[in-house]
Image (cartoon, rainbow, N blue to C red):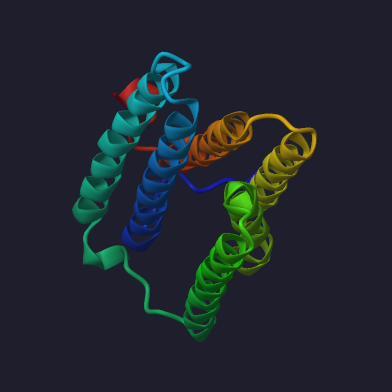
Length: 199
């Protein structure tokens, strides 16, 4: 389990804030995918529950970024060559992920198998966490990658067994939203400024 010192620098807090913002956006995306698939079969339960989570994330994002401003420039470190190298590979991984998603989407549409897109999407997103875990030294990312890959495999299995597309897509969306929620909570705890007791 990753631990962070209680006293964080401006740069560290900003990184946590950016990470939490990304988890907020990704959670919203996966929940939207699930809700569209379920078509109100869950009576809005998924949207309602994760809507609370998203609001909670936004509040904590604001608190973390405000704390980063209060810390001031005195605690900021100069960018090291290692950090610049990591940043470069971070963007490379994201670019490869984006291209892979677009290519898969195009192939599936042309082959008439658009129903397989969400499982492939989850698989690509899940797999991208493995090099990220190594690059950023984030062991928790291995869990995220494994969990999302399992969700993708579940989706493929359900479609193979002839289950309706809404079930496969909805469960993948729900499962991946749970993963991004877990990571968001982890980031909030690492920030140490707005955990449950600070609300």
